[in-house]
Length: 63
Length: 413
Image 1 (tube, each protein chain N blue to C red):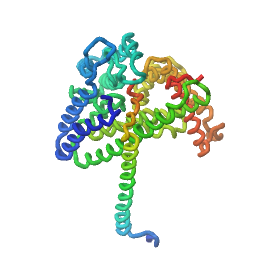
Image 2 (spheres, rainbow over the protein chains, first blue to last red):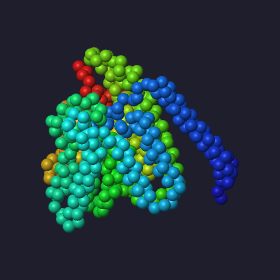
Image 3 (cartoon, chains in turn brown, blue):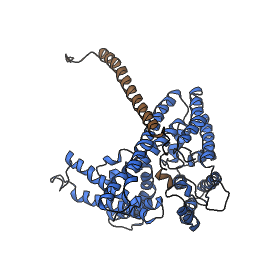
Image 4 (cartoon, chains in turn blue, yellow):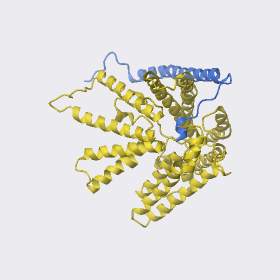
């Protein structure tokens, strides 16, 4: 007869654990992305907010 | 207005095109595909009018505006494609297909070779879109490849119907019209006909926002800083040190410039419900030159692989021109990369760049065949462990960076 290893959680419990862990990971990922986008906006403001010249033309638009 | 080159462009596109389309996709979730089609056509017409509102060429005594050149070009290419499609429903001869491809190539060849255009291009700022000639508009090179894609697939019997609206949207789709990525008609058609859904919209929005921010990071921050803080300060006199510095700087600049552009183009496409394919996949981590060409300017290299390399090999095998399949493949490399280099422009440096890459790919194939391990014998020199892979990345990086130095046109000797 097949036995369940002592260390493995019952399927329902494992699913519950995945559900509880997943929102935190998702929140962390969302926070990371938000920080990434915010950092980009801040650097854009820092570079171009002082009236700096716009970026050079795209190289591949010349072909 | 040069696409993606100023904050004004993003403000106009965002306010007048992307925001209304996003709202419509939210409100009309579950509507038929024609909503998307109408939205794409309206957005493309409006943005083309904005992007191509300038005169064709200030050096040419003509008041013709670029927008009319774009519309005339699209109408002409549609007539050629529709005529070929009508012929293919009853005729089997191959010459109409060849003639149609020649007609599709015509405007590009005129733009590249007409002396008037060469003079105008020389008068304009190097590499800037303002150097367009009498028939050339920004993105003609890319539109030509899309037009040929349609013609070859009609010729092969893979495209059975061609509506003017869908063809126009594909040929001059505004997010990708100026520099690609070079989409394929049948892939574009799948998105064009797909029904709208709210889930699909939010997935597209997620992908679009991420790509647009990445585009800003690449082009407006990293490429800008490389250009302003590095490339501009390298003296023009070609010493080895300056050339080496320029080689690394230009390679990084080219990547962040073009990958940034591609991220914008793909992000805008996603908002319109079109999943334009990626153009880059960490190219500087390629372990060999063959792998590099599956990671750098992917849509261009795959286009040439499918429509030049494979077609040429099929043709020569059918005609039995070569006994050795490897010789045929090496000639196909030369033809493919030579044409790919030439596609960038008629300046000798582009041809040299193409031939250089043909030599690299051929050299890599010869070496890989010689080095190949056999069941009873390990690889002769180059192993497969991580140190060999790291060495492969380093060698490939330097080989492609030297190629970009050729591509840049800067004198290095």
